[in-house]
Length: 381
Ligand code: NDP
Ligand code: MG
Image 1 (spheres, rainbow, N blue to C red):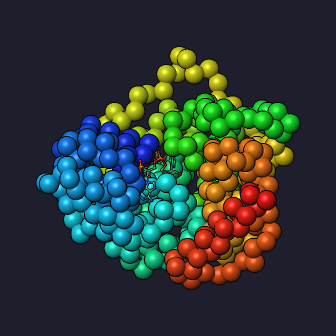
Image 2 (tube, rainbow, N blue to C red; image 1 turned 90 degrees about the vertical axis):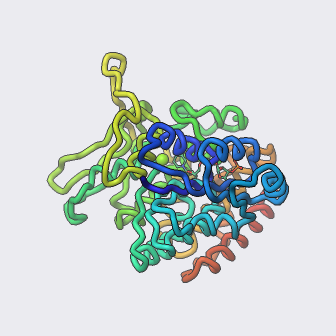
């Protein structure tokens, strides 16, 4: 029995994780879950999975849970979430809180030497260097859950890094693939949230529409696989069957395929170094007629280039990139910013940032706060 903690259990990745665990009750036991405020779903999850510990970020939700549950220890706030992230009894921690809020608990799990199934890419974008050094120091292994990185992880499977020429991260292209800049002028949040292939939380869905998600994934790949930006390419692949490719120095490629369902990379992280049977259905080759690939249109979707730039500048710039994007997406979703202005706000905040070399998570969080403030100033201007 592997004992599992699920951070962000009420979200898209969290619920898919619990679905895999539900399918294999003799292999996994949920010992802790954490979320922000979704009390009704937490109550259902507590009833079904009987975790020993539950942490919730918001006060009101905490008080409601305290009133309704007595068999489970209820913890509160960012501190409570960090407690669950480093639970002594946990064998694996699934890090699936969304956004910068995922950084501290991910870092705590790593400091505690846990095996981490990492969905929260933002923590690597914000603090990749610090997280990686800590994971080496504490012997904590990170298994990527992001489907592209899971694909690269599977294709690399033991090959020495010197044999890699490039990796190619695939992207569906999002709901606005093929559109030109002027057609995106007045797109609404509802349109941006209509992802053609994946059902995900709102932040990552908007990030997929701007291609910032792919930009974050380039930075994530840089840290996970120790590759420079020049060796990380992006390919638009609308069918979302090939989840990424590794190109070796001899000119050959390995690709990983499956139907687009996050349960596949989640199950791989949960079961690693083993595999679980029948997690997702086979590809239906009778209906899948073609696999297409094309290079991204970075004129229409400038966020991807902004992410490459932030990675090349390095230091605190990726932290600023993430914080500003988080604010800009929130502003877009609440009608305060146009879709095409997201990249402009990020450009402005990046231009006004003097890169630093943060050496602690506290410094990272302080840069994150600076960028958020700056981003709101630009939006309100
Ligand atoms: P969702 O928005 O669906 O879920 C977010 C989860 O985080 C919820 O459980 C939410 O709780 C919780 N949460 C939010 N803020 C806090 C906080 N301050 N403290 C504790 N918990 C918090 O997001 P996704 O599941 O889509 O994404 C999660 C992560 O996985 C992201 O980093 C994303 O980039 C990554 N990812 C997601 C993929 C997907 O297919 N969805 C694919 C690849 C990566 P509550 O419900 O109570 O608000
Ligand atoms: Mg991905």
